[in-house]
Image (cartoon, rainbow, N blue to C red; front, top):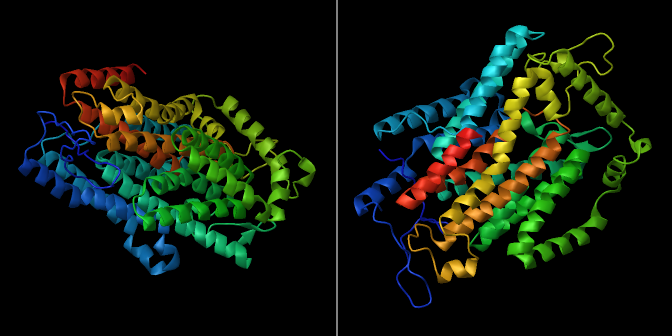
Length: 489
């Protein structure tokens, strides 16, 4: 059975039928293989009642909001595990019931699974086998399962946007807590830096800033594409709070990542929405005088070591050297997943500390094969947007927005709103990945959730587009050609 996905999703944010023919609006062309009315109704019902997708939303809500931190009694319920397992069971049964394979397969899924296999294979050679296996069972196996779930449930623009709204609102709430704590002088560390009000991947100030930078472009994209004032204000408010959280964290890596991410988004906006880009620059200039002096003092230590009162800059340099030395000592197997902090050879100066560089973290802990696999995943995430653009050009959608509206391809299966969504989402993901990568060069986050969420969101439009364009013979060949290139890569 064909793994057909729902598209038909324009700028209004809702799935719908093609507009009626009017002299000032092109008719939406429907391919012959379009589903009949009963099938469309069944697809719509499945979209609404897909327990796998609802389970993914529940798991993500627990992961971000961490209600068990506020109500310890919830720990015994294992809410995240229950939501994940229930969603996976629903996904498998649903796909088998529709005559599909248990799961879709992409090169990215292969890379994620392969990295898990490397963690297990190198565990017997690590400095602490139990600790390495614990990293897999406690953290990474969950990453594999949730990535598998995202790959198989983010099957339409509507679902992707619903997922984005959950992530943006949750991150906005965490940002609000951070800004509020900073304003009250609570939950501060290291001479006034705010840390996350909840645990997990938001606790450390640098990790807090990294997540804010990674999600900020998604909030900006939702704000630009929102069709109601309330949604625009909600997404924009979350974006402002995320910037405030980065400033309150006083993270140097977060600030550099924020600058790079802003540059990526700025290039896109200048090409598509120059008025918005100029307004953003003006708002930034007006906001600069209101930033706290302590923030500028810490940021200045990037170029002036004498201003680094905590000595963290020099400590990072030492950790980079020690991480590289660990890789040279154990180039094939590494010291074990999550074990660099426990690696204590003679002469180590910064014992019991992380690598603080995601590339060297993987190299030191998993060796050359783990490093190659992780770099493969980063490259695949970065290429996902260009693959979408290539497919659109091959399908005849490589025109300007005005020309697409005036003369859609004769075999058109996408509305102008569909194409605009694809372009806007891939641009936002490119900025998010660029910001994450810069911040990750100063953090040990190889097994954290953020990258794998971004990876799934980056490839989701490509998979949706491949399935949608496979409806005509010409476009099926284009999709097959892309698959062949993926295999060769």
